Length: 308
Image (tube, rainbow, N blue to C red; front, side):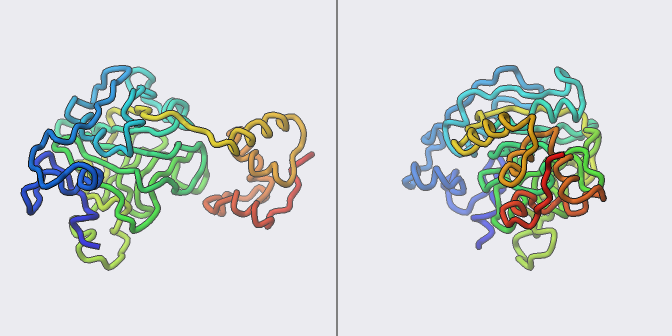
């Protein structure tokens, strides 16, 4: 894997070897560019924002938009959460940003020199799902002091993470890397960390610094204080038929006890999740919580009935 194809360091001025300004932007490369150097040749639809952003300018919006999977993500960006409108609280962040479809999270770091950075999560952010998930459409970025976009390296699957109220695992939001987050927001919405390495892909020795997005540090320092956060929804949640049936099933069974197949759907219900997990594992600390409980159900390893 050559570093040029996976590193995707997009400053606004492209430092590519040939004259084609847009070489690394794969869609454009495939669809639009026929050895033509005209920068305006590839037009990207610019979304409308429901409320003006305190952190994004027009150029930022154009750049982020360019990397989204397709035009269905470029219709309207709805402001789901902002520190000034909703209060700088992780609880509000969770309430407004989870289970809302595809989102863009933007963070402003404290201080005069503080950077503005963030990421795009294609998959719905799940409540209390303490493991990494997501897909390779995700990317992270720095917007200030300069625009850089970092796409998935394919080295691991640690695309996104969201968790609250766990006794043993990280509570908060993170993108990238189990050891080195591309960036994170802690459960108090005060601190985060961004750790990256310039040599990340060039040596390819698979050490922990080889993170999900191949990013260098997005913030001005590895551990930062958070001043302001915004979250935009760029595509509504699309439920599959199976998910819709699951929700209906879950709602029908809210009152009665549920065993067997129902265990899986109960976990989707925020209020029941902790009870269910405690029922399955006994009341000890949730040390096994990071294993996929749904997988365990499928394998029928857990037979504890949940009624009574």
